[in-house]
Image 1: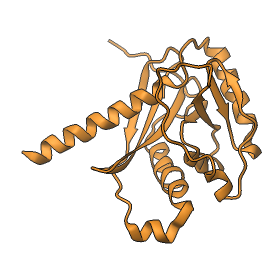
Image 2: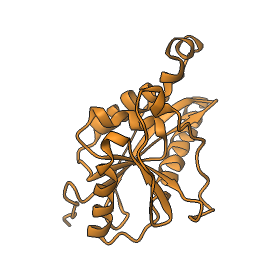
Image 3: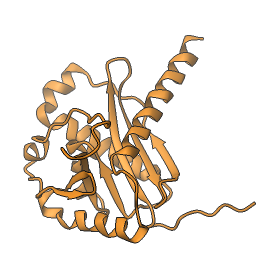
Length: 194
């Protein structure tokens, strides 16, 4: 039986990082089709940040680690390119100047789904790197923004959603990524305990 695989550009990427005191920081990247079906999933090995790194990198640590290093590594692993990459962490926007793909930040809006528990965010991180966030706009029940100099990225996402007839919740795939990362960590801990 042959499998139908979506074409490049018909996919949407969801990239986030989970932090844990037990295993450190782990990045996850999920590519989904217009119907919300998972097409690819990749994750990084856990990274433990040392106190010396925290001191030396200061406020640039998270954007460099999450966006430039983890984000870039995850995109390099993927076999397909999405129309747009969504993240729920401002620090991952540091990836945008390094790639030729639109990158937007998606958050639940105040009027959006209250059942989605947002991650803690540091919206000062773009300013730390000398960037500004663009004007946020409402896309369904989510608030979407991009770096000011890449404001057109939001319109790429809107166009993709309209073209695909997207009826899903833009914040929901982040929960799938976080749950998959927690499950992978749980399984790795069980194997290590044997």
